[in-house]
Length: 455
Ligand code: GDP
Ligand code: MG
Image (tube, rainbow, N blue to C red; front, side, top):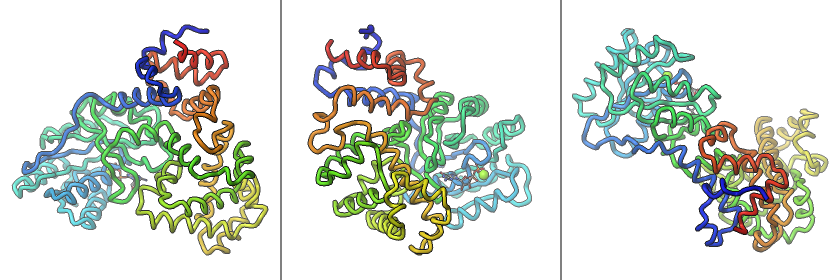
């Protein structure tokens, strides 16, 4: 058996002795390390009530600054703060109109100019005006460029020097690639960034770059943007963010719920699930199951890909309505489509089918396509879990699943992780070696890893 010394650092032996099962422990260890990575070790800046708090936004063009300014203003306004917006972006045509439109819609006082071209003058005038009027949250939007350029940074610095903000927020698009660390650092080097907001977490991006931004700016993430709408905005919470980053939804919870679904009533389905097969009809039947089960939003929220779509918006009723709509669409499908083990492919091969189903169910072709996308995600998930025998049997799943099967599940976590996150773990010997073993997945390594149980 390989030496186990490295694992001890990441996995607390006391915890082990307390009899937590191994899979939970490993997940927990991975979690804890990632949580550490998003914690810069400094307290997040918060505004002071009754004071004039000036918040300046910086970031690349298109990162979501103007949208996020409005979201933050709206957030504080709803909490009863006297809030306003200033547009100091004179670079992009239409920038003022964009902010004005957002502000007007949300009834937030704003300041800007169509004629003044100097952002320093606009920012200073706006801040002075609103300070005199005793506004508590004064948010200043600035311009961005496609990439960091000296002129942008010079302008940004001048604005910051002129208005002396209490907090500078760096806005980062979750989908930016490898460059995020260098970009965040360039901003931090020029002005005193104290907070990070990550936008566009509603899309496919998992936000691994956020870890880099935190590291580069030594600033905490304070909010996340989850859509284009003004209330698609949430205070940053570490745990859900990390689970999204790991791309695993709440696998633990999902497994429990799947067990609760009493799938053992349905031998045929279990047989299929065991082989990782999942048809549109199976999905239909699951939806029926779920609707019977009562508070199903919890379950949907745990399925990767369904979570943000169903959970962030609206309430149970709305989710119910969406689920019904999906079922209506499937009602217009024929047996061949419903029973194929690769339902999405049947449609992509003959796109005319999409039109037929859309017409039949009175929805747009986009709706049908979205359903197929969700089905694909669901089917992939089943495929991953299907390889693990016993997972879908009733009762206590830990009794049904062997050590090597648990290892396989852990392996999935590693595979689903953002490679950048793995990269970041370089400094953490224990975790890194653990993750490497997951990735290699060699039987010997796995046995070794599981061997720590016997120490
Ligand atoms: P700026 O150039 O940094 O001011 O960026 P904008 O605020 O103009 O945003 C650029 C684009 O990103 C716009 O189309 C926004 O609607 C969009 N956007 C901003 N935040 C989010 C978000 O959290 N989710 C999504 N899906 N889109 C966003
Ligand atoms: Mg803008």
